[in-house]
Amino acid sequence: MSRKQTTVIYGGGLAGLSLGISLRQRNVPVELHEAGTYPRHRVCGEFIAGAGKPLFEELGIATALEDALSLETTVWHCGRRQVLSKRLPSPVTSISRYTLDDRLSQLFQEKGGVLHCGSRVKEDSVRHEGSVWATGRRPPNQDSSGKGWIGLKCHASGLTLKSDLEFYFGRNGYLGISPISKNRFNICGLFRVNRRLLGTKQNLFNRYLEDNGLRHLVPRMEEAQVDPESWCAVAGLDYRNGPPETAGLRIGDQFGLIAPLTGNGMSIAFESAALAAPFIESWASHKRSWQEAIRAIHDTQTKAFAKRKQFGKLLQVFLLNPCGQSLLRLLCATHILPFKTLYSLTHQV
Image 1 (cartoon, helix red, strand yellow):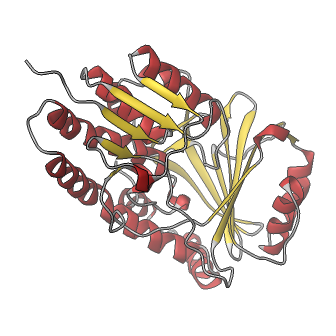
Image 2: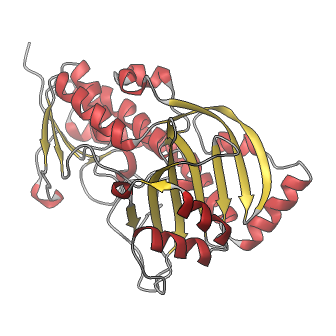
């Protein structure tokens, strides 16, 4: 029997690490290049809405999530006003990316994967078969008018929540708060870029809250005990579906980013890894060509995620503008908001 071919993964986030672990379970040689180091914080809502224990076990990563929290309820606000309080259609898994990425990187190495940290590789320098791009979101694609998005995030303690997941919709953005461990919370916001707002860390966060009509949350932010090392910011989010018109195998956010408001991004990262693994194993075992594997994986991801991404984009546009929020208040007040339907359209449930 001929030796299995080596897969080289570029990007050590959830998609890249979980794919590497899954391939090692299949005895496929894997090298992974990560530009940063572990552990580190990332801008993310830090809850897995969609994927659950069966998928974690399939990927071989269940042990890394054994102590994760299970969240079951959500409360939505338009500005100060609470408009919705619901039990989620299915529990959401919540865990710090700082913790999870570190655990997955260790698990990958324990299973025989070769990890290269601090290794930033330019895509145009890679030509060999077996290369998988899992480097997260694509490069910024914002125009000079400043109409793009900025994501801001930190961890804090000393908070009391009304529900497991709190959402606050503002004029041009939102803030979400959820627990990630005992007495530690993720505070994550997505806002339209306003180039007149200057500052760093909490000062910039507070300015965006004020600019979006969420001034009442500023004292709550200031009273919380924020971990100073947890501050993160990211801009240039791209919601185009499908891979760009270049060669190469792409999974996770590299294949296409779902609207962050859905909370389905972490789930898609795991799902894309599970979808890709058997096709890559087939290539590694000399049973199909690399181009056949790429086509099959991209087609499978398109079929699995296209509807979710499209509805997610529409839902985010709807909820992050004044007209949409007015209709949301009306639908909630009359108890006719199709909450479960909206959830199922933007998640794998």
